[in-house]
Each structure stands twice: as structure tokens, then as C-alpha cells.
Image (cartoon, rainbow, N blue to C red; front, side):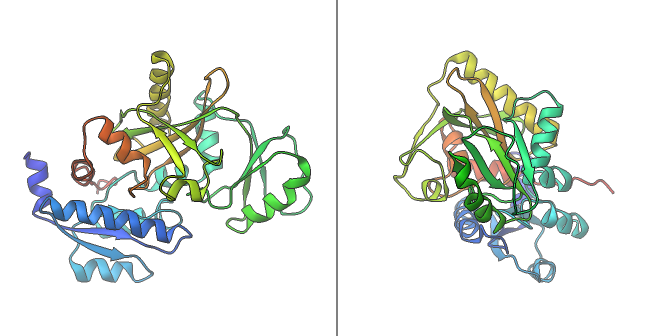
Length: 310
């Protein structure tokens, strides 16, 4: 046991879960798994179901380190990170700006493209009325600020676009229309700026939606992904580069890719608080690297920090 682990074990850890976003139920499952892992390793940890009284709860509980298990708005967008910086409670994962950038799919695409990293062509829609579709079908329609594939759909012909936009606008006031990349879906986990084994995702339905993500048996996961060595190395390099350019180079982060028919990769999005449920991807990648779930959680919590140095 190193000195950092010993120091964290002496502190009271709050696993921040639940929250106010549309991903609350997934967050509760993620948080429960994290709490169980921490307790199994002898940490003093409690669950904090986050509501608008979170500052009072953190202070009443005497929380000294926060493990963030909050998905979606107020959890992955920099909001709770700002609260914790203000309260001077070290927390897991990226900081305020990096979290806000990664949560916003449009900002992420602009950042990675400005750095010369590949991402599908796109356009933005800010009103649910008539839209001048500038991309050939099929396209993917998704809320700019949402996760877990909520509000997302594939539009294969222009006539289906209005319904897809209506669904996406139910979650956000800004919608991304993105060129659909037909081919493989691969995710690259990055732990403390180091890449983990890749995972290829093969949903039974052909589309990795909310049901495919969180229903056991609905998706096949190939770990490590059966890719050519050069292709795998390129994806891992791109994942690390995407994390660095957005400031998401600490903690556990997941970068999602689509590969076309020639295995050319395209960055789709960056997840700064990946799921930690029984079907989640990052724990599968960590296990393939020889890191079991409790060890993964321990490594993440021991990296908790404040990003502002006062």
C-alpha cells in the first residue's frame, strides 16, 4: 500500500450519485457499485444522493474526498466540479472546464477538429422548425448536452428528420446532426492519461441505444477489439490525444469511435464519468489490462484532486 492510498483511507469519501439529470437511474447503479468496491477495500465511504442541498450534505457528513458517479447535467458538465472546488474537496476525474467541454458534444467536436483529430462532419440545429439538411442521409441526430444515448436516433431518409429532431429537442435546446459512419463501434478507455485495451461493441439491434447499453445480453463486447495492431495503436493514440486537447487527461475517461469500412477512425464523443455498472465498458477494459473492479475504483479515488491551486 503506497502513501497516497494510506492517506486517502484516512479520509471520509462521499460517493456522489443520483443527481438531477435524465441519467439519474444509471448514476444510482454506478454509484452503488463504486460504494461497494470502496467498502470492500476498507475505505470510509458513504453515498451522497445529490440534490440542491448538496453543499449542506457534504459539510454535514464531513466529506473529505468526492468520488463522482454523477452522469449527465450537473454531474459531468462542470457544475458539481465547481461546487467541490469552492468547498475545497478533492474529487475524481477532470476539472470544471474539461468536464464542460466534454459534456457538450459540439464543443468537443470543435476542439478535436481544431487539433487535427478526425470526427464526422456535422451541422447544428437550434430550432425545431424547418431544417436545411446539409448532410446526406443517413445521419445521427442527438442532443448536444446529454449522455447514455438519450434522445439519439439514426435518420436514414429525410422524411424521418422532423420526428428525430423532436425527440432530441425533448432533452436539449441544441441538437447535433452528424454524418453517420457505417462500420464498427469501438471505445477506448484512458486511465490517468494511459490507454487501456480497446473494446468493440456489437449491439444485437445494430444500434447502441439506451436499451442496448444497460440491458444484459443485448450487446456483445469484444475485449480486446479484434483490430489490426496498427489500427488499435492509432485509436489508442487518438484517444489519449483527444483527452489531452480537451483537458480530460486525469482519472478514468472513455473516448468513443466509429470506424468506417476501411477502419478509418472517427471520434464521436468523450465521456468524463463513464458508467460503472455490470454492463459498463471501462471496467471491462480495465479487467483486460489486469485491473479488477475494486482495484480500478481504488486507483481512481487515489487520484482525486483539486484542479485550482489557491
